[in-house]
Image (cartoon, rainbow over all chains, first blue to last red; front, side):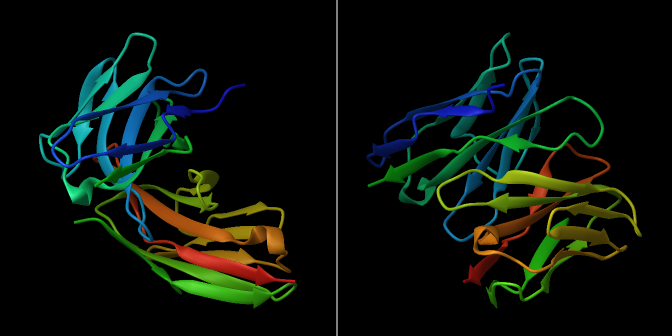
Length: 113
Length: 110
């Protein structure tokens, strides 16, 4: 039973560029959430997708956008990259049910130079 | 605003030396409190969900408890393989997102 898979594992981009990160949820899960984790910090909520729509958004600028496909996979797009966007980006999947825990992938390490 | 704090920031134990990690939270209506373990370079791994004050959950050497304002993760007779960062998160009744604390970095020395 495959867990949450993310690609790529590492990425180096230049300030001002755009990046797309990809996520396949755990089998059976229909909800995907994205989190940003800075070094030494806990994950920060970016947004959640369910039924191909953004259901809730955290305190992140519009440069961060996403998409969910009919097969429940998801993408995170970040435009006009800033040095401060350097972080571990985590995708988490869950059931659309009360108290369903998040199951995380191993993340994409993004470095902006 | 929902908030989660964790203490201590870092903890070093000798193998077999039991201890507890603390998670204090402020949330407008708790839907659930979640404990995760995160190894370096990996994503968080789900450990427990606690729903209401007085509830306890156990898994091997770990036991999580919950009160109305905080949760404790008790580690009994830890082994070096228990070394990791332990994250606590809360989910409020009104939202879908999880609010995470900064974590406690645990090192268990042989």
